[in-house]
Length: 187
Image 1 (spheres, one colour):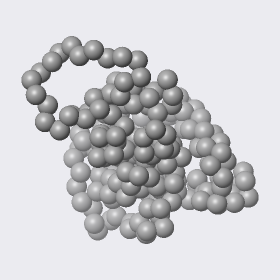
Image 2 (cartoon, helix red, strand yellow):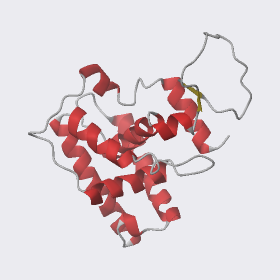
Image 3 (tube, one colour):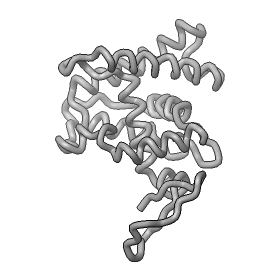
């Protein structure tokens, strides 16, 4: 099983309960008065981050699904102002971490350097989650990672190419054979 298959299985098991759950419980409301706009450069930057998290393999990666654009919409329309601030500051923190570790901005790093940096940030956010209190703010990299997965697996690319897809399912079949290596279903 490769990393992409593991992520697919985990996301299906979680059923979206964690990823973006708060946005669905509270509902997305346009906050045009308070939302900070994202530039085209920001969207390209977020696409590169997302594509490092979910790169192209035998299926297209997160950049093919334009996950960066999805992130900007979710942050502006669904995140509270404090979480929007964390996300925007996190974009800068991620770039600062690249500068500190590799003396170069994230977009100029080689793919293996990007992956190494994001693995370190992922380990950092996991440690943060272990000690986080209920009223502590979210970790910026966790926000980015959750939005990447949510954006990818709800996109046309994620549904139709990363999983098996039936546009109009027929009758309900409660037990369908599943062989190791088969794609998960998306309906």
